[in-house]
Amino acid sequence: MSTSPIRLATIGSSAITERFLDAVRHTEGVTYGAAYSRDLDRAHAFGEPRGATAFYDDLGALAQSDEVDAVYVASPNGLHAEQALTMIAGGKHVLIEKALASNERAGREVLSAAAERGVVCLEAMRNLHTQGFANIQRTLPELGAISQASLRFGKVTSRIARLNAREYVSQFDPELSEGALMDIGVYVVELAVALFGRPQSVLASLLARELAWEAKEGRDIIDVAGSLSLRYADKIVDLSYSKVGDDLVDSQVMGDGGTLLIPNANVPRDIALVRHEDKGMVYATVSGERETIKADVPDNDMICELSLFRDAVRGDAAAREAVAHFAQVTLCSLNIMDEARRQAGVRFPADKA
Image (cartoon, rainbow, N blue to C red; front, side):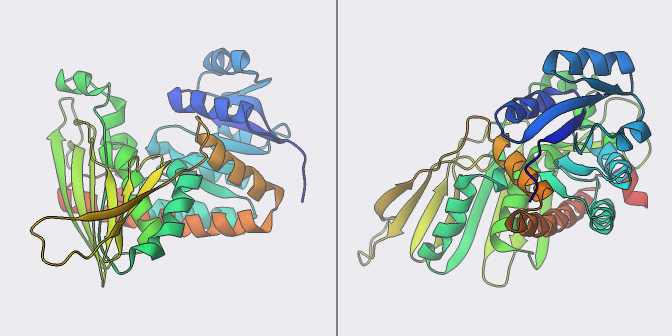
């Protein structure tokens, strides 16, 4: 297994890219080397203060660069697949910010291309790569027969005021495959799939708004919040997400032997197991012993996904196996979100293909 530093390039200059580069600085075996922007001056302006020494305004040139081993793709969702395919064709490993692609079809194309080219492709789904998530998985058998789960994540976005003022907001533009489901609903969708697998059916109720700006017919609404009910043979998993409300309720998984409380579905850290106690006929919910299960998660949890990506790029067999597993989680999650959007009438340009 190679231990040479992995030379990273970035596509995108948003706050999430800033946070990613902070993770790079705190992760051994990776270095930041190159910045891409459609405007070369902007590539320099973003990359130079953060340590980049190579700058690109041409994706093809970046893909063929001998100075880059892997690329972090953090552009708008609608650009992920096309940009990732260009990087993969050039032999670059890709870490793609969530959501990996606009829909399942595009996601399969990207992952298939990576497999054929022999490069690593991982969705930067940070809540699935922490010790907190591993603790959830490890604790599930202690719940007994699981019948229900409620996974939730909601926070008022700083951009909602602009949307309310009828301004154009790119994070709510269906032409860019954006919206609340793709941005933060994806956290609970992928958590559900990673824990319970593919559901038998999906029932979605999305809160959608008409766009204030001129939009193409058929793509003139976007979701700002919603709920999904995933039905399995032996359980029901309810998902809730919002960019217009702060959700202050813990997520939970319920079984006949206990209930697991998950305070932060988007970044699982410490969780609590409350074991069931049978006290006979009692006209209230009676909780038993409560055990806190602590997790060691870095302040910048993106270090966790970056470490897995690094190990997979280096050829570590266990990391490669994990990447292959999470690829299937990604595809199933995209399928669920495709169906939720279909039921709500929220459409992206990629949905026509």
